[in-house]
Image 1 (spheres, protein in one colour):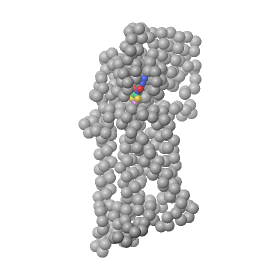
Image 2: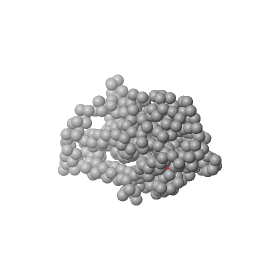
Image 3: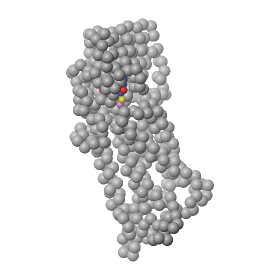
Length: 395
Ligand SMILES: Nc1nc2c(c(=O)[nH]1)N[C@H]1C(S)=C(S)[C@@H](COP(=O)(O)O)O[C@H]1N2
Ligand SMILES: [Mo]
């Protein structure tokens, strides 16, 4: 025992039955699936916020972003216990000989180091983001996006290298004793620690429990369990959570000013409308979710003027439209609505919520609400709408 401490450990010093390729391969496969799902749904969210003309996103169904972003946060959260389990099961391999060996093996080890560090970075920054405001605002999304590509690239390398090992490990039953490796005594019992089956069951229970806690912020029957969800339906005015309040956004005097007007500006014309004039226009009622990038989402009934009716007052309907808030600073003080969304009959400049006048914290006097888009783009306290030229590029 003491002799062991006098030298760096060898792989064979780790005697738990859990340190086994069968466990590593299984946990690794689930971790890869969780990261893959988080990656694809994350790309959707990124494309909404940084659109590219050659990959237009669908405007329907209205609940699509609610689902993809809910999955993004749930998959990212599930990746945390899977990552810890995989690191625990696999870390003795760090002490395998030779330490570096051939250049190829050195490269493989470097790719694993990159994989582990980027995976930890992604889940930690993502988790912090679901709990807070947007401490890094624009910076968070760019960094999370770039690091995601590095992570996925290192996973591709890792999987390519390990594919034969993984396939072989999956073929062997988890519980069967393993005679060609250490860790079993004469009776075939594992020597130390939990059994492989017990370990995998524990991981599964943790992942499922954590997922229930995460999706509880959206799926009402589970909301009692949503202790990991800072914002749930019912803990804001009018039954809808609030991220930034009017006070925090610094819009209080301006948003309550009875002299408030909405400025509409188009390529050829411009006009202003009071709230009374907006209320005198045709009102449309729609059920649309607010689906925050943090993963929470809540369905609400909105009433207001169709965006396309407002656009028609000052410009061609086939235009991208910029919505500007009275809020002075911050990344979410404005958003650009691509022409396809602006033309959608359910895209509203909302004046009412749940049958009542919009609460000040939900964007009174007027806020944008559109189908299938991230909450961050549903600009509140709007006082300016700019209609760009038809076919104008989406920024
Ligand atoms: N002007 C402005 N609009 C904003 C925000 C903001 O900070 N400023 N936050 C956005 C975010 S992140 C979300 S999720 C939704 C939430 O809308 P709610 O507060 O009415 O639920 O508003 C969006 N609109
Ligand atoms: Mo949000």
